[in-house]
Image (cartoon, rainbow, N blue to C red; front, side, top):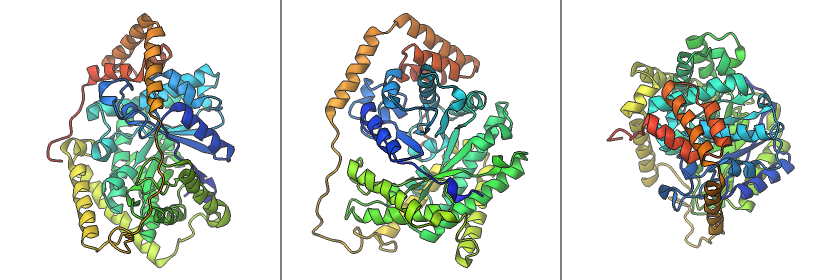
Length: 482
C-alpha cells in the first residue's frame, strides 16, 4: 500500500508543435509540478514521418509531431532532464521515442542513470482497444521486452511499462473488465520478460499501471483498492518475488474522457472533480484531470489551467491526502472491493485458460468482450436507464457555444519545412549505414535500443527506422469480425 503523500500531479501537454509544448512544460514546471506528460500526434504514434502521404491532415492534431532528434531537442529545450520526471504516451514505436529522449540526454551530458519517467510501452491494449499498432503481436512483444531489458541496465529509475486499463475502459469495458484485462496483460508482459532472460525482481518494481476513473464514485474507489490487492496476490503467486516492491501496484489515473459531453460542457468540470476525488480516495499516486472542453476539441490554455487547479485544490485544500486509505472499513466499499476482486479474478483465469493475453489478442477475444460491454452501455443511455445530464435528461435547448482551441496550420507547414531541410542537409551515407545496423538487430534478435539511439543521432527519422522494422517484422491486421 502506498502513502497518499506520494501523490503527484501531471497535466497533459500535447499541442501542435514542439515549441508550443515546450512552453506548456515550462508553465507547468514554474507552477511547481513534479512531472510533465506529453502525447504525440497520430503519425508519430504510428511510426510515420510528418511528410508521409498517410500523415496528411493529422500532423499535430492530437499531440506533438516528432520526426527526428531535432524535434526532440526543441521539445526539451531548457529542461533539465535530471530534475524532471517525464511521462510519454507512446506504444508501437516506444523504443524509438525513448531512444530519442536518451539521445538528447546524452547530448546534454546527463547520465542515463539519472533519467526518470514512464513510457507507456503497452502494445497489447492497442490491439485490444486503441488500434495504434504497427507490427504483429509477437514482434511487438519483442520490442516491449527489448526496452525493458535495456532500461534495467541503463535507466534503472525509468518505469519501463505503464500497463493501461484506461483505453480499454474508454472503449467500453466495465470496471471488472478494466481490472481483469489490465492485470492479464501485466501477467503476459511479465512472462514475456522472463522468457527473454530477465528475473521478475529486475523489472517488477519498475512496472506501473494506468487506470481511468468514471462516474460511479464508490465503485471506482473500490476498483483501485481491488486492483492493488489482486496484483499483489497474482505477482506473489506466479513469480515468487523476493523484493516487496515487485508486488506493489503503482498507478496513474486519468479522469474519464468518454464521460465528457459536448452538451453543457461546463458540467464536465464537476464530473472531472468528482472523478479526481474518487481516484485520490482510491489511492492513486499520479493524476491527470481532463479539461472540460475535450469533448469539443483540444483544450485551451484556460481550460487546461482549470483542470490543473482542480488537482491543486484537492491536494492543498481538502486534506484528503493525509490518509492512506480513508474509506477502509466502510461496509459498502469493502463489499464492492471484494466483489470486484472476485469477478476480476474470474476473468483473469478465463483468459489464462484460453492461452493468456497474447493468444486472446490474436483470436480477438478481448475485443469482442469490450464490444459487447460498450453496446450494453450505449443501450442503457439510449433507453434512459443511465442518466447523462444534458444529453438524455435536464436538456437545455438554449445552450451557448464555447471557444475551442484553433490550431495554426502554419505550424504544420513549419514542421514539413524542417523535415525537408533535414533530409537535404544530413549525411545520407551515415544515415543508410546506421539504418542497416538497425536492420541487422531486428533480424538477429539483438536488443534494438542501442542501434536505434545511434541511428537517431545520425539524423535518421522515426519514419525511416520504423520502416526498417516494418520490412523485418511485417504489419498486422486485426482479426475479422472483431
